[in-house]
Structures are given as C-alpha cells and as structure tokens.
Length: 427
Image 1 (cartoon, rainbow, N blue to C red):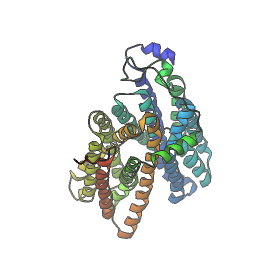
Image 2 (image 1 turned 45 degrees about the vertical axis):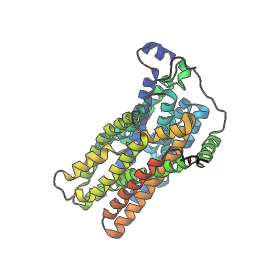
Image 3 (image 1 turned 90 degrees about the horizontal axis):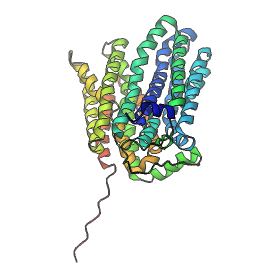
Image 4 (image 1 turned 135 degrees about the horizontal axis):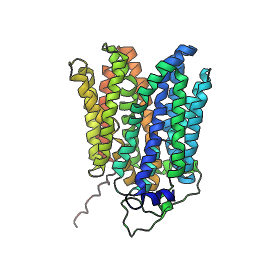
C-alpha cells in the first residue's frame, strides 16, 4: 500500500482511494443481497420449493444482515478493518459458490441465510461509518452519502444482468457470476485498504497539518466492545431517539415499499415488470438523493435535514394510494419524490451519532441503530401483509407508514439537544 501512496503522490488524499475500494466492496455486497429475489422463481420451478421456504432463507439473511452491524464494527476495532473484511468477503464468495450444489431447502437457509447474510452484514453501513470516521474529519457527510448510495447502485447494476442470465442460462450461472464479483474485490481490499491514515503516515482528510498522527488500538474482545457500547449508549436518551427514528426508517422503506410495492401495483392492474421498473426508477433517484444528502449534512443541521426527510416521506406515502388514480403523473411523481428520499436519512443519522458518541464509538452505536432499522423493516413487512390479507387493500398500511414518518420527524428534532437548565433566580 505504500507503493500506492507513492504512486498517487501528493495529488490527492489516500482516503479517497480508500472510499473507492469500499464503494466497490459495498457494490458487490449489495448485488449479492439482491440475488435471492432473482433465484426465487427458478428454484421454485426446479425443486418445487414453496415461496415460504425460500422466503425463510431471505428472512434469516435480512435479520443477520442487520444484527451483524455492531459486532462487525467491534471486530474492526479489535482485529482491523482489512482482516475482518477479508474474512467476510471470503465467506461470501465461498458461500455463494457453494450454493450451486444445493438440492435441499435447509441448504438454502444455511448458505444464503446464515453464511451470506452474516458476511454481507459486515460489508454494510457499519463498514461505511468506520471508514468515514477514521479517514475523514471534513466531508464526512458527502463520503457517507456516496458509500450509502452504493447499495442502490449495486442493485441497479446487478439485477437486470442477473435476471437476464437466469432467464437464458439458469440460476446456477447467476450464482457463479455473483461469486466471481465477490472474489474480485478481495485482492483490492488486501492490497489497497490500509487500517488507518496513520499506517500511511497521514492525517485524516481535513485534519490540521499540525495535528499529531495517532491511532487507537484496543485489545478487548469484540463481543465485549459491542455489548459494552450498547450498555453505555442505551443509558442515554439520544440512543433511543436514534434507534426508534431508524426503526421507522426501516419500516417505511425496506419493510413496506421495498417488500410490498410490486404486489400493490398488481392490485391496480399493473404487471410485475412494471412494478419492478418503478422500484428501479426509485433506485436511480436514490443514488442522487443520498449523495446530495451527504453533501447537505456537511453544511446544515442534521436534525433539521432529518425532520424534512421524514416529514416529506410521510406525506409521499399518504399520497401513494391516490397516485394510482392519477393518469401519467401519479406514480412517476411518487417515484421521483420518494426515490430521492429513500435512504437519504443515513448520512445525517451517522453525523448525529458521531457528534454524540465520538468517532471511536459511533460506528458501533450506529451498528445497533441499523439493527433497529432492520427490526422496523421486519415489523412493516409482516404488518403490511397482514393488513392487506384482512382488508384487501394496502391503503391503511400506507397511511400508518406515513403517520409513523411524521412521528419520526418530530422525534429527530430532540436528538443531541442539551437539556434546558433553569435560569438562576434573582435574590
């Protein structure tokens, strides 16, 4: 890696190359996470597995993806980013490749649920938060926005390609393409991703030139780090405000829209392809919206940004049932408006976590907050399905999801605000 630093010289900070490597890692992980949705129908046709059986593996995958965050961040503190990430990528590539041999449902759950779910949980938002807080003092919001947007980009890049491969060549070829993509980024991490700026004799980007070059090393057990950080953070009001606002974020994105939008479109006479195209369009706008959100979080109050993000998302969800009755502009307007806001909440949430808990603890705290996000997604996916089954429509679920977002808009205004101290009374 020192040769890479000498190669780029003083033209730009090595932190930007680090961002590029992590972006590619997150891109590959996002494509891997999206793969089971492409494999569902081919597996059903070949093995006769039910949707419920395949969905069980996907549910385990989602749960582990969320729960791995704080432990991955703790492992990165204890063992280093590179060793932790190389282990995860190796497990991911091996698991995906091994799935080409599966013939039983339990193998699908073990491989795609446990192995792939756990490994992709390492290459997730906690990795982004760790890299951003280590390598950047300024521009943190912008960098976090770029890395967060990679999840949408990964699905955009992989899904159309994987769907075409599955249609023409079968699901096993899909598996090998994804395994190859995961394997390709392994040497990039091994040779181009240092642990700290200090290991390159650099200061974080934006750090004053007279600041000492330092690094922090811990010998604690990763489990002790993760649970110790949770025990400390959970005693503060700000943690629960962050946790429950992100719970609502997950419920109103991955849980509700991400899971049920295609089925909702079917209720109004649209095909699955049309519904999937709507989601893809939202992903395009998310790429721009989340990157812009990162840029804004470097310049404006994160609480105010989150207030607008959640508030406008709530209004757009309340508008959604009516959008199907508006010719031409109805759904495209929703796709643009909601797409820009899809995961725009991530950069200002990371910024607030860093401001409250410091750059060493923030990635682990944020990992626990992301676990809340996934719990919210699971809650909404199940709840919306139950409401649809009992009422025959998604309208009530849309209104509840929108209302929760309005609640979150109020909650976030209280994060990182000092308690009011009563003025001393005159004697």
